[in-house]
Image (cartoon, rainbow, N blue to C red):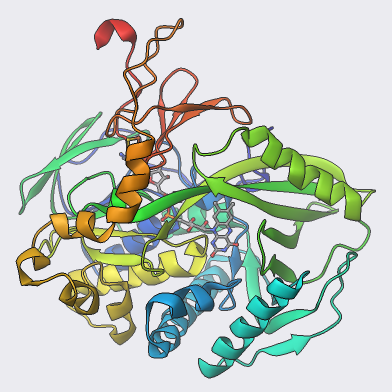
Amino acid sequence: MTRQTLWHEAANRAETDGTAVPSRVEVAVVGAGITGLTTAVLLARAGLSVAVLEARTVAGSTTGASTAKVSLLQGTTFSTIARHHPPSVIGTYVEANRAAQEWLSGFCETAGVPVQSRDAVTFAVSDQGERQARQELALARDAGLPVTWVPELDLPFGHRGGVQLSEQLQTDPVAVAHALVREARAHGATVHEGVRALRVSGDQPALIETDSGVVQADRVVLATGMPILDRGGYFARMEARRSYLMAFRGVVAPPSGMYLSAEQPSRSLREARRGDDKLLLVGGAGHTTGRTRSEREHLDQLRDWTRRWWPQAEETHAWSAQDHSTSHGLPFAGPLQPGTEHLLVAGGFAKWGMTNGVAGAMALAARVTGGRLDWAAIYEPWRRSELAGLGTFARFNASVAVEMARGWMRLDAAHRAEPAAAPDGLSRVCTHLGGKVKWNDAEQTWDCPLHGSRFDADGTVLNAPATCGLRRASTE
Ligand SMILES: Cc1cc2nc3c(=O)[nH]c(=O)nc-3n(C[C@H](O)[C@H](O)[C@H](O)COP(=O)(O)OP(=O)(O)OC[C@H]3O[C@@H](n4cnc5c(N)ncnc54)[C@H](O)[C@@H]3O)c2cc1C
Ligand code: FES
């Protein structure tokens, strides 16, 4: 399996500012994915001094590995939201995602990033899938989206039709990210790759300790996927899910739309261009990070499925990435804890961050600049409707989140580790909260089944919430 995604291979990289971080800024954004970079653009355009601190490279994590559908129809997301919230929340969610889609499309047009208009389709292959897709159709209609049911789709396998929303968008997420870097820097922001935030303390200013020095900031935006700080208990309210993407050439007529199956195991399809090649992207086969016997088997399933339906398909790329689902079915964008306006967080996009990450950034930027976006209320991490059920004592207490996620915590307990010795001297104990890491046989990494931290074979951190690498036995 290659680690380089299709998008990174062709990237026209923006210049960045090295590891010499500024000692003082108004806003420090941690994480240079779509969320952090959009936040940086909005705040730099508003005249604030902004530094983006990125542990790895621009779009080097989930954003750069995305399928990059920029769509208001999102698989069966509306049905998920409907399980937790009243129907009006779906309307507000659509409004937020529409605002983000419009912002991103306008940005791409100005920045010269190619975007293609495509039909988005949630398709079904089984009775149960058809029921789910039809429910999504009804919820989408109630939310005012002009969706239709299409019985015959341009797919080579048997299916039951699907719900379709026309004129949605697809793009190249790495091209978007580098265009955002250029825009942020053009407005005075600095973007630092290879700078890992280790700790945040104090309030105004907050002190961000990094592996390249300390940055003082009036506000800190954590856009790291899973937040790197445990305050607020997000690690217990979010679940990291890995899934796989492969690119194939040689498919004469790839399906023209952006497809996602209603049922599991999910199958996601879109086409992409690379030079003269028309590529078919196939994604899915997801699982909770670190909680499967063999990651390679998931990749093989996807490969076998593709070869079955497109026998002429020739694999060019295969990669994997993770995103986070939340226990209440909605993303977060707001204060890390109640009242901590200097410490903001955004995440939990459930594989729809190309719009929700932008919406989250818009919500946070409005918060910082004193603006107001009515739809942003659904992203509040400490929504009154949720907190009301927990009693007033817990209401303003950080342990609320842990209580809300008690079920998830129990699951976590089952995976807790004994300290492990290893012949290579590398500890198998996750540096976040002591989970026992598991070998990922597809990517040759150590993955933690508790909250999704991942480490390279040499112990280097790849994914938050961990901020430091696996220890060597001699240093424990
Ligand atoms: C396989 C797959 C397909 C997807 N397809 C789609 C799609 O078609 N449409 C869609 O809308 N969404 C899709 N998504 C979801 C979307 O890509 C994500 O929601 C989005 O990219 C998340 O962006 P982000 O900026 O929040 O996080 P990321 O892109 O993960 O950025 C977080 C950054 O923070 C950095 N970081 C972490 N810890 C630290 C630290 N301590 N110090 C400094 N930096 C740190 C990381 O290195 C990383 O670069 C998909 C996700 C996956 C996994
Ligand atoms: S990610 Fe939390 S214990 Fe490993």
